[in-house]
View 1 (cartoon, helix red, strand yellow):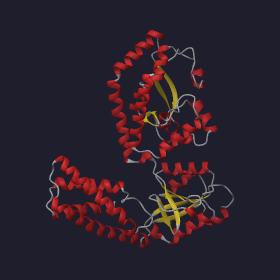
View 2: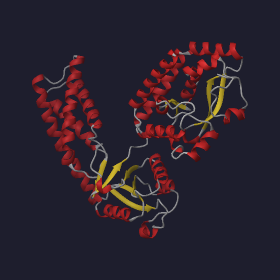
View 3: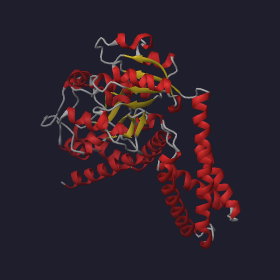
View 4: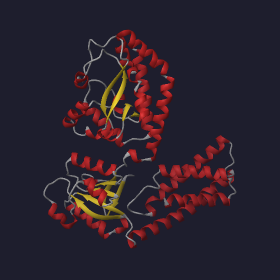
Length: 434
């Protein structure tokens, strides 16, 4: 936040020196903050080194001013005069970099002298975890204040942790100890335990730093921090805690409501076809599992003759079922039977994009049989998803679906949602043409 404030002050001063209009200053300020944010100039970091971030900072300024000038030209707005653009850039760089030096110096001083930093929990009690704990204590300039250690692999190594060991449920420890950062310091721990611990900490708002396997051979990258030579990979935050997730939810509500309105004639025609072919009911409702295991009723246009509730909950695939008529086959092939789920999206049961919802019985079965299947329920389920646009529909591999769903969650962005929607439309057009 202090770095953002420094850039705002530098922009205001550069605008004042070169008589830029308030509109031009505000527009340039917005472009600068967005570009530098995307370049990760404002990212959280352990080592507050001005020199480490200098190349990235200068490159982001050049990109921001180039984009700003292009926007001014396109909108025919008054920005910096042609002869002044280079000077505005130079003045901004000088002012912003001086302020960055001041910010880093103040923050480093606060960490060392005032013990300012995140309350940190180390997961793993092996010698590497103990050494990381010791380095955090001895070097507060990294901004981590270790409060305890938790054993991950239950290997009997708790004696090494001594009085630093904390026992109990991880979520309870994080809440009671007001933990801000969790360090996964046991690369040898079981994947299931590590994933579960990571998701728990992420959902509670913690920053996650992970010591990778073969860390001695690990080289630097944008998401890699260094703590006294140890590489720590900073994992992405829980997507549902980002501001952009609220944008996603807004798009869901508006998009589903508009789509329902525009497609209401199509839904009505499909319902009429169902009525003519097999009578009532027109809408099929079934219990599904959504985010965090919550159950809800999903709505579809009925594509087959009614089945008993037990059969509907336990029959996995209805391919070749004689109860599916010509209308039903068309609805299923074109996915028109799923249009009533737009109402589920408006209600908040679902999203436009996310892992597809499944019936409770199969969720229990797949969770027991497939590693990581349970983790796909940490975000809302969707009308379409990454697995589906990669051909995983109907009677296909559950393990592959879970892998795609968890990839989607780990790499979620608004652009990924847009891409999945476009791929879904392409797939629907292809199916409709056959």
